[in-house]
Image 1 (tube, rainbow, N blue to C red):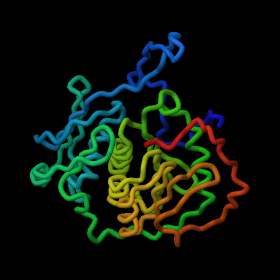
Image 2: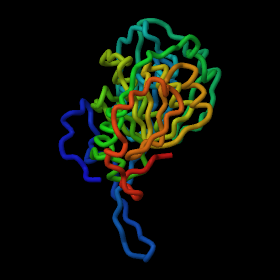
Image 3: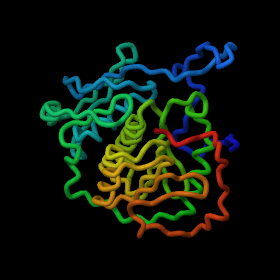
Image 4: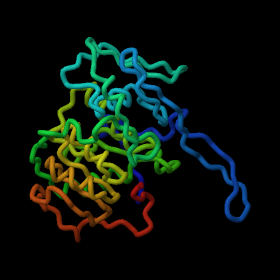
Length: 293
């Protein structure tokens, strides 16, 4: 698939040429010939909430303030009523300190940790289902023409994945327009960056779609639901618990979305099939972008 040249339609687009995101490494190929390869950087980012150290995450290092805000929001450590008084990033110390006007409940959260299936740092706190009680997402209609249009744009957008691989992408979309495209070594980091951007900018979620290259796991479904986004789509596949939670909260869940094909395992009644798959350009079997694990 040919890459697109104009990314001006994005509010935030990937910048695969950005300094510090990749490093050139010399190696050898299967024949013994020397090769130069760009590889993705990983660096630690320690997140504080007020005076309490919360977690150290491995990340590519871009948008650290959004990552910190989104992580705390998606873990239930920041709530809609919390007044955020500061988000300070120290590049030398590789730390972000998020400050609130009043005390939070993070101490209780820290007593209960669960390691999840997410790659890199996939830590959630307490009961993974905490906070989902009573969550019912808006029954937003989903046009299949929008899904096909989004996939065609996103999969041809210049990105760190296409430049170096070994990374996940998550895109916040509205209708047939991708708005914010974040990447990171862990799919949860990428979605946390989007959550942090939405929190920082006061962006409504009810009319949005979240697109990810990663698996549709319970963690991804929970994060999407907690953000209030009613549609989650991916090039990759599903886990059974992810599907179960999506059905419980009314999330439209679409996976294996490649070319003309997709599978909907939750929210089928909200699909508006206004595009003929036969008229959609299919992907070659050996595509430049594959569903990430």
